[in-house]
Each structure stands twice: as structure tokens, then as C-alpha cells.
Length: 97
Image 1 (cartoon, rainbow, N blue to C red):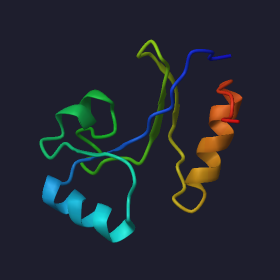
Image 2 (image 1 turned 90 degrees about the horizontal axis):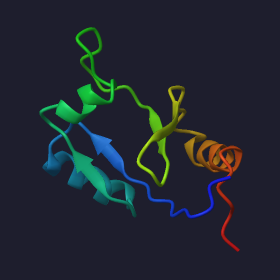
Image 3 (image 1 turned 120 degrees about the vertical axis):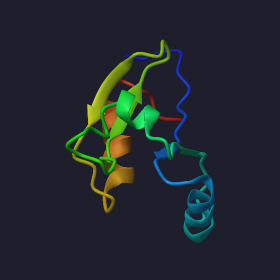
Image 4 (image 1 turned 180 degrees about the horizontal axis):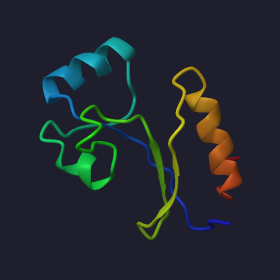
């Protein structure tokens, strides 16, 4: 179980900051959106490759120590919130009281 935890979430995109700002406003996003138009971070995480130039929609679960605990490579936008909550529970992250 992850004891000393703080759940933080954000979206990383290979779009420009301007495009991400418009998206965030349109969707009333309440979380930070990071822009990586040069795709350096996306390549480092493997979501963009030479054979996959568009970023894959993956969720990375990173522990308090900065290590990747798991990667969900089958993200469904329709169920992503519920899937995220379920996966955090499976990883032992307690729910807020």
C-alpha cells in the first residue's frame, strides 16, 4: 500500500500551449495541461516513436518516489475517470475520507 501519498494529475500533450489552452477552456479542465510540441518528453515516455508519430493516449501511475508503478495503454476516454479510480485502488492508494 502506498502510505504517504498525494495524488496529482495532469495531461501532457504534443499540441501547442495555445491549442491546449483552447481545449482546456472548451472542456472546463480543472487540471494542469503540459505542452510538448517538440515531442521530447513524449518520445522519452514512449508515447511517440518513429513508427507512431501521433501521441498514444496512455496513463502513467507514478509513485511518491518518482518511479513508474504502472502504465495503462488501453485508455478509453468514455470510462477514463472510473478506470483511474479503480486502478488507484488496485495500487493501494486509499480513498479520501
